[in-house]
Length: 206
Image (tube, rainbow, N blue to C red):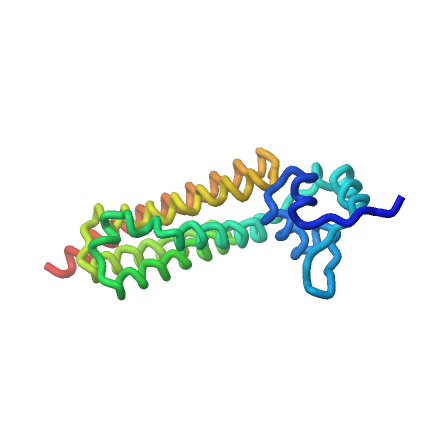
């Protein structure tokens, strides 16, 4: 019997994951994939079945690679207009809004660095991001409550995306739990830095 060729979506159905997860695995060389002349991904059913039996249960995706997929997911989520419903966002002019959209990147890339950093480097990264959010809020006359709301919006978007991406990839519960713990620890440190910096900047201006 001739080996059947599968599309990306067909392979995703067989593996029980989201198509974006299959795309990620393929691009990272985790999953056997073939490219057509037109650049489309194609999969052999026999290779997918063999991989599913021998590799899928034991293979873990590296946190750094998973976070790259999370960042793409967050960008899509934010671009859908969810920001416009936020009360703090409505108080900003277009330049300030652009700055806040760009500031989201520092949080996402900071978390990626945190995944592989030691405790001292992580603390420095968290402080820097908290300072950035606090000083930006001061610059655009947001209250400390709105400053916290702005940060929590991006933090919650990040957490939701991690849950989705890790769930779609069927990441083992133990690995997912470690990542959730890292996110909460890191973002808690940022929030504390944000509030402390906001207060100190206010005292300095008096």
